[in-house]
Image (cartoon, rainbow, N blue to C red; front, side):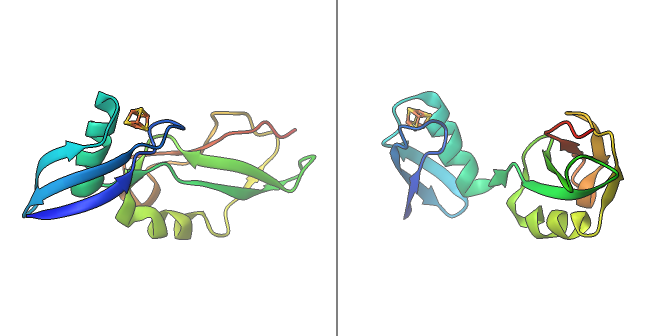
Length: 119
Ligand code: SF4
């Protein structure tokens, strides 16, 4: 049996979770105050994912860069490939919130979208 200590990121309460694993199987999640915490503890120990945020350059806009993020969370082991794929990308103004900046980033089936308007 292995025990992992995690902090739930589901809300600002930040419950301290203890996840008990047998091999790769989660046996128990303790310390959570709600079901989201249990789901987070299970996922974090078996298939951790994250939303990735960054910025890309804007050509001809009122500001030089626009903030972007993955539309959905991606596997944690794809974060580096995702950031690499964003390197050197430049988009033409205007950019609108939700515009797809890069499709299927790093083969994740997830798009990179703008999170800011730039005119
Ligand atoms: S377990 Fe529930 S209450 Fe606790 S931090 Fe996670 S989401 Fe918030």
